[in-house]
Image 1 (tube, rainbow, N blue to C red):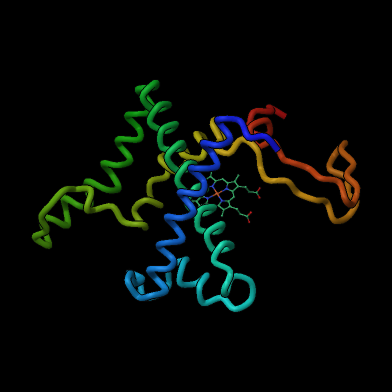
Image 2: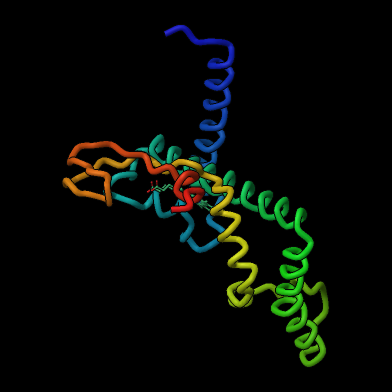
Length: 187
Ligand code: HEM
């Protein structure tokens, strides 16, 4: 197969990225870089696996890069979408700010007074407090609906015949749910 200039560049970048991760794995194996979280990180789990990944470093590289790309592109795009949409509507922005004030800043100010804490109010962010921010959570869901970072799901192979309203699917059919269209279809 003849590679275009673009293909060659992608191929080079792909090899360079894989080599970087391979070096990291080798350094971990030789003890040069240790897990920061008591061997409970993804790489430690994959290296200790004896069923599929054990001894297959190329498969481990696939998984690490998959997680890395799946996690970074989606979260950064969603953050941008949230900032963009809220900047366009002052009413929403004010409610989001109120949520931060009520659930993060205010409790932290109180802790600071009673427990003598110092530092920025964003040190008051905790997992539980994030879940108390109801408006923020709903806003995030709506941003995900309007601008889903992954517009298409992965391919699914249907195992058994079934009917979904007017759509009939047979075993062996391959479908790719269109997340964007589903979320934009008023029906
Ligand atoms: C706003 C954030 C995110 C969105 C919108 C999102 C969206 C998606 C979607 C639509 C799929 C395909 C599901 C399917 O077809 O069955 C998927 C799969 C996946 N995502 Fe995410 N994702 C997000 C964050 C993350 C993060 C933070 C990670 C990892 C740290 C991650 C790792 C993965 C992996 C590994 C898969 C493949 C799962 C599989 O095939 O079994 N995602 N994601």
